[in-house]
Image (cartoon, rainbow, N blue to C red; front, side, top):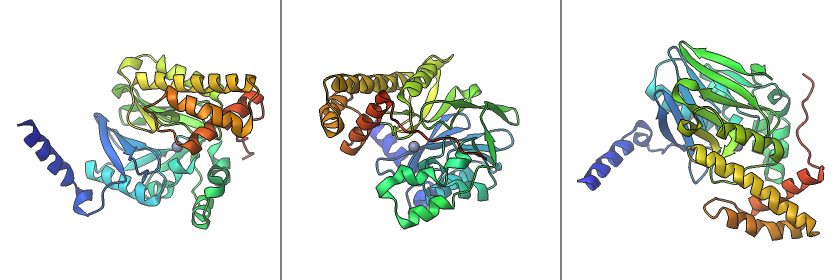
Amino acid sequence: MIPRILAIAALLVLAGPAAAQGSPLPFTLKQIAPGVYAAIDGPEHKAGSNAGFVIGDDGVLVVDALFTPDAARALVAEIRRLTPKPIRYVVNTHYHADHTGGDQVLRDAGAVIIANKNVRGWIRTNNLNLFGDRITPELKARIEALPLPDLVTDKNLTIWLGGRKVELRTVLGHTGGDLVISVPDAHVLFTGDLLWRKVAPNLIDGSVKEWAATAADFAAMPNAARTIYVPGHGDVADVRDVQDFQAYLFGLRRLVTEARLAGLKGDALARAVAPRLKALHPDWAISDRAAAGEVSFMAEEIAGTKRRPVPRPE
Ligand SMILES: [Zn+2]
C-alpha cells in the first residue's frame, strides 16, 4: 500500500496552485514548525538562495527576498495561499543580491525592509564586486535600483508578531553586516549565509576566523540538539550540519596553512589544496571555481591581505 499512498501524496503536491498555473515553484516550500516555513532553493538555483517566513498572530515576517523578482513573487504567492495576514517585515540577512534581489516585491506587498546597518551602504555598490566578470548590463541596472532598507540596526532586535517573538541577532563572519533570525517558540534559527549545508560557502567578504566562532556559537546554543537551522544555501539543517560546516572551515584553514608552509602560492596552491578539500567532504557540492575561490580567499586571510567590505558613512 505504501507506494499507492506515496503516489496519492505526489498527486496532492502536484495539485497545488503553482502547478495548476503550469509553473513549478523556484524553491521547495517546507513547513518546519507551526507557522514557520523554509523556502529551499533547488538544484537548478532558480531562487538563488534560501528564504523563509514566520506567521505570527497579526502578521508575517519574511526572511530574505531571494534573487529575482519572479522568485520573490512566487514566495509572496505561497504566503498568500497560507494566510491572509499582512506581510509586515522582510529581514535581509545580508546585502548579497541573491538574498535581496526580490526586496522591492516584498516592499510592494507591504513589508518594511530590515537589515544590518551596513547593508544600506553596500547593497547597490558592493553587489557589483560580488558578481565581478559575471555581471550583465541587466543585472547591473537591477542592482543599482535595489531598494535601500527602511530600518537598520547594529544591535540585536526583538520583533513581536502579536504574541509571537522573533529575535534578530547581529553576527560576524560572512560579510560584516549579517543578521540571523530566531523563532524561540519553534526552536528555529534562520542563519542566512553564516551556514551552508553541504555546499562550499562564498568567502569573498568573509573572515573564516570570525565565521568559525559564529558557527561554534550556533552549535553551543541552548537547545541546539532540537534546533532546526535554515541555512542560506543547501537543505534544512540540524546541529550535526553546523558541526560539519565548522569542520569544513577548520579543514580549509589547515590545508591552506600547510600548503603555504610548503612554499606553494597562487594557482599552484589552489591546484594542490582543491582536491584535498573535496576529498575531506565527498558529499558536498564544491565546483572547481568554488574550490579555487575558497583557497585564494583563505590564503589572503592568512597572509593578512584579505579585503573586506568597509562600513560607509550614512
Ligand atoms: Zn547567499
